[in-house]
Structure formats: C-alpha cells, structure tokens
Length: 618
Image (cartoon, rainbow, N blue to C red; front, side):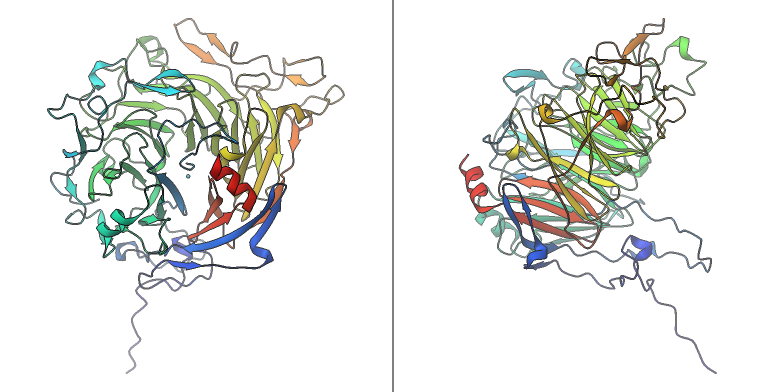
C-alpha cells in the first residue's frame, strides 16, 4: 500500500501573499542583502547631471505566519482573503536636524526626508516615564514657529487635552510594556542586533536612520553604518501587516524616539525603539476595525497623531490615553456636526459638501481615545499630507476626491475630483503654495487651492497607477519646483515646473462636455465662464466655494472636473524604469534619491557629484 506524502506546509509560490507570480515562497527567515550593481542600466541622466545607483539593499521578505496558511481551493477563480499589504515604505530620521527647520530650499537647510488579536498582556495600555535630554512644557508645545509666524497646535484651545503636569519636567513619557519580554499574541518575534547598544553609541549623530515595513515584518536600520544590511531591531507580527509608520520630529533625541505604526487589522503600536518599549492602541479594533492606510504625528504635538482608516474615517489618537468603545457624539455647536435638524439625513450624510464630525476635538469627553473622529467618505482614504504652515490637511481618497481641510477648525474648505479613478498619493510643495497628487488615471495633477481654476497642470509620463509623489526640497526655490513620482509601471519620473512657463490650451473653440470621470453627485460642467485668455474657469474658488443651507452650516461646492482640452500638460524631465517590481515609495536626501519596491529592494541613486557637494555646503 502506497502512502502519499503530506501536502506542503506553505503554498509553493508566494503569489497569494503579495509576491510576484512564480516567486518561490521563502521557507525560512533570510537576511537582508546589500549589493552594488553597475552598468548603464543603473544610471539616468537629467539636466543637472548623471544619477548613479550606489547600492541596492534588499529587505528580506518574511515567510507567512503558520496561522496565515490559505485554505486550499481547487476553484481557479476563487480568491482567499489576505491581510492588506503596502509594499516597502520608509521613514527617514536624522537626529541632528532641527524639527522646525524651514523647508524652502535650493540653498536652504536640510530636511529629514519624506514622508509613504488575541489574548494580550494585561498592562499594554499603560505608560511610564523616562529621563530625557530636553523638556518642553510638560509634554506639549504650545505653538510652532513656521516661516516666521506662530501656528497654533491642534486642540490647543481645549484645556482638557493638556497633559497632566509632571513632578519632574525633565522626564519624557514612554510606553510601559517591554517589547522583548512581551507575551502578546500580536507579536511573533523580536530580534536585536548582538551589539545593539554599542552600535547606537558609536554611530555619527548626523547619520540617517530608516524604519522599514515589509509584509508582517518591521525593521530599524542604520543607513550610516558600513554594515547597513544588518538591522538594529526586527519585529515579526502575527497575521497583521504594518502598512504605515511615522516618527515624531518634536520628541526625537539620541535617547528617545517616538514611532507609531498602523496595521492591516486597524490596530496601532506606539513604539520607543531605543528602550524597546511599546503600547498598543485601538486594540482589537475597539475604536475602528478597518485597516490603517496612513498615519502621521500632528505637527507640533508630542502626543497626538492622525490615522486614516480604510472606511473613510480620520481618527485623532493620544498615545498616552486608554481606548474605549467609540460611540459617535452629537454636538450641535460644531458647524460640520449633526444637529437635531439633520436627524432625517443623519444616516446618509453628504460627504461631497461637508465632513461629518463624529467627535470634535472640542468635546468635553477627552479622558479616553479617540480625541477626534471625522468621517469624510464611505470609500478608502489612501493618503493625507499636512501643509508646511501646519494649518491645512490635503486628503485623497479612492472615490477620486482631493479634500482640503482646515484641520484646526475641523472644516472642509475645498473638494476637487480626479480626471478618472481614485487618487493614491499627495504632497505639498515646500512653500505650501501647491498640492501634487497621483492617481489611478496614470496622471500627476498640480493644484493651487488659492487660485481659480485650482488645477494648474497635469503631468503625463507614467504608464500605470502612480503610487508615491514627493518634492525634492533641495531643488526648489521661489520660482521653480522639482518633484518626483513612482508608479506600478516600475518607473520613476522627475518633473520641473514653473507656473510662468505653463501654457494652457485655448478652449474657446472646444465644445464643453462632461468628463468621463463624472460620477453621481459631481456637478456637471455647466455655469462656467471664460477669462481673458479664453480658458474655462469654474465659478467656485476658496472665497466662494461655500454656501449656507439655512441651518448654520457651510457646504462646500465641489469643483467640476477640468477637461483635458483646457488643462496644461506637463512632460517629465525624466521617465525611466529603475526596478524589476512595482515601486511604492520615493524619498529625497541631500545627496541621493531613494526608491523602494514591493519586493523589498531599497535603491539609493546618488546625485551628480558637483550638485551633491553644493547641497552639502548649503
């Protein structure tokens, strides 16, 4: 009698786990690999000179946790639900850079980089204190000095959000739970470098740290080390995939780093990597159970951060507060909240005209998380970005909308539509004048919210969805701008634009018609007028984009979709395939451009030698 061997423990290929088709599934954990490819295919030429690939750091993709084994199904058309995956994204940190350094630049100062379940330990929600290098108003900064003027901090007017005074103001709060000794089922393994403490002491202060996620793994790297492939810390999670993360530039010091991570389960971890302590927030989705697509610390705050959930909700959390089951509040004092007159429409709020404030930052109930909750849409929020003056928030969604919010006042200021499909990424120019978005229409869109029409130009250079956009602050000045983008076409595009050089097509002879991206609820392209140059202009702008509805609320009129015939088209100064897999992140440093792909490759492209020297000296 012949006995058949047991089936393999893991599927033979990694396609079900987000790897390219045909890629063998790794059976064991592997180490990071650093290579130095050379040749003409690993360089690209731009106007300022030749960019050359310096190194390719391949972050090891962890095998799936045994509990993630998919159920075999002979139906080839079936799909097996898997945790959401965001590819490989980085958060760069330089401890030697001031958190309030200005971001305007060709000869400006340096920036720190760009921005991409079960039974638990009983005290995972607590916090403790630890000595710190400097103090700042009992854990909070009252205002931020940006471009020479003071910007209020979010929630500053609500005294209930002020942290309790500490006996010793030189101590900084930190998470209480020990990561290496945790018995949480959420964390599978934690691996430290053998000489962890020595490497932290011996490294240069101005060296660059990188925090990297790939599937269910998260790594802390020292990019200033000659052995940068060796991680300082590697965390493996159970089932959950880390989708986004951010470092608090306000609280950073050689002895303290506050980092937050958002997961595919909706949970959030506040981690202090120097002391290896952590706290879990939104545990088991107690506040919001949908995955966290984007997360950032609120500018100027030491303890508040903003998380975008995939159900279309923005939630403000406090790293030091306990979580409770969230029940939306009715606060008639807020212009964008529900009132008694809205009860008939409460179940179906109009997200195209206002935001739905389910809990205001001015609420009297601030003993627990969440601090504030804003429902923007029923569709996934893909990304958001804070303006350089820390007053406005740009949010892009799967429903193809760009929203400009005054997050200090919790108000929707403007709403714009994509040409087609959803928006996937967004960033502000260093001077705060322009917003750049990328989307599923393979286009780059440049917006100026203070002008009408707001759409300045569209950039056409990608052959698939755009996944990340970022300005190069070292190549921007008062008159011209440089930004980059990467996409699922494995291509990097670099763009130069100056508003005075953009020419819109004359549309006087073009028959006006609706765009193919018009969707239910979007206003048709009627009621527009023409300016002296013959181009179509919307009637609504920042000053006239709201209208009263008789109940004390202001509703925003969405701007119509600008047809291609009336929009300037911007060609890239560079368009080149630079990887073998889908690109998902882009960042700029004084001496290089960094890209990452979903397969874990982080590539560093050095700037032209003369240009790099000029930027280092600036």
